[in-house]
Length: 223
Image (cartoon, rainbow, N blue to C red; front, side):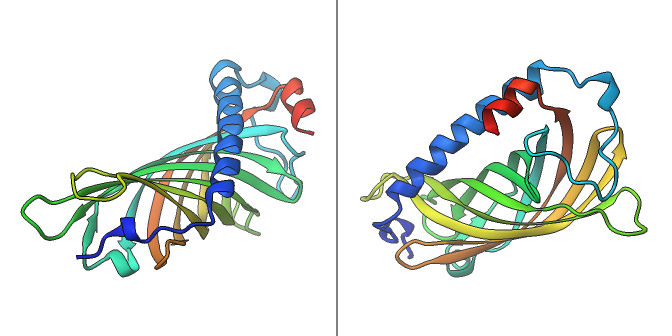
C-alpha cells in the first residue's frame, strides 16, 4: 500500500510560509470588501469589452465544486470524493491574480480500516480572461498557479498526521455572464504535487462568481 506520508519534500517550507501569508492578507481584505461594501450604483455593469480593468479596481468572489478525474500515482490506492472550492480574484495589470482555497476527501481503496485523507490546496494564480469575439457575454479563462497542498490523515498508522507539499498547475475554461455582475464558470484543471515521488491531479470544476467594486483605500494600499 502506498503511503503519501513517505513522499515528503524537504525544500518547500519557505514557499509554504509565503503562500500562507499572502493568502491571509488577500482573503481577509476580500472578505471585508466583498462582504461589507455594496457595489456603487454607477458601476453595475462590467467594463467595456476589450478594455482592461485597472489593477485592483474590483474583487471577484467565486464558489463552486470540483470532481477529480485522475489522481495519477495515487489512483490505485485512493478514491476521491467531489470537492468544494472558493476563490478571490482581482485585476492585476494585463491579467487577473487570484487566490484559491479548496477542500476534498480521499479514501483508501483497501484495508479493514480505510484511511481518510483530507486535502486542502491553497493556490495563488495569475491568468487571462479575454472576451471572445462575437460571443457577447462569453469569456475564455486560462491561468497558472503555485501553492501548497495541505493534507490531514485520519488513521492511527505510524507517521506524520499532517503534511504539506509544493503544488503547481494550470487551469482553462469558459465563463458566461448571466446578468449584472454574476457569472457561471466551468473548466479543466491540472496540478502536480511535488512530493519525493510526485503525482498529478486532473479535475473539472464549475461554480458561480460575483464581482464587487474595490474602495479607494484598497486600490491605494495595493498599488
